[in-house]
Amino acid sequence: MAWSYGEAPTLLMLIYVMHRWFRDDTAQAVAADRRADAHGDPELDAYNDYLTRLHQKDT
Image (cartoon, rainbow, N blue to C red; front, side, top):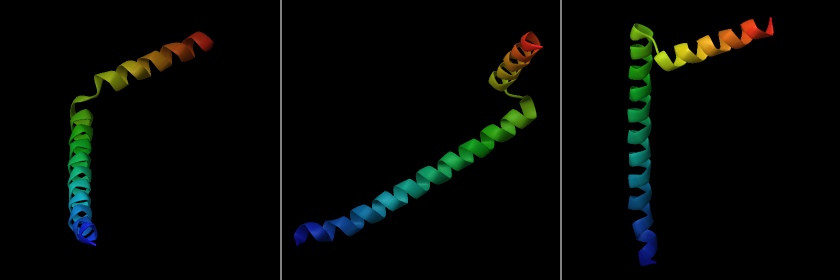
């Protein structure tokens, strides 16, 4: 019986931590997208160049 009283606060803390994690992760993703839109993304550009070269070899 005493153990069950500790579950509610633990569950509330878990929900709070997961909400904060989701919100922070979303904010970081938005910032990274803005940075990529403004300055480009070297990794994505390199991957697109690679795909273009593969396509040119096939044709």
